[in-house]
Image (cartoon, rainbow, N blue to C red):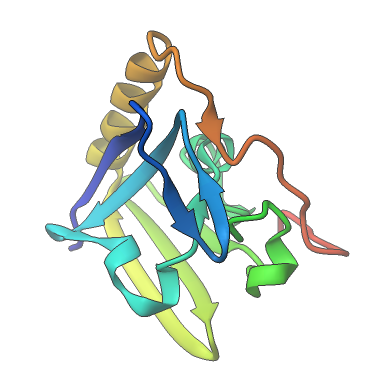
Length: 144
């Protein structure tokens, strides 16, 4: 089973971060770790932003969620069509396709929910805005 960890990356104090040609400063980003590896370190995810609201919703029911989007916030610009999430009593399964490559992860549901709830508590005290600030879903996007 894969192990999900969530963290915040803060870009502050005059620093900036460039993703897909867009410069970000004075913002926070959700970072996903899977089995100890930062997902954004993989080439397919290097310019992706995590849509925390969608990640949070994915813990409540099976369906398609836009967990990743392009740095500009327009999902289709980065080829993001959503993550198919299947929940059962004990697991959360992600199935997605990135650059024509099928990717699957299976997480322990209790740990998945715990990570999301922990980050939600952290965000409640965060002064920086969370990127992306706006998201445009793919045309014809459906939850199921």
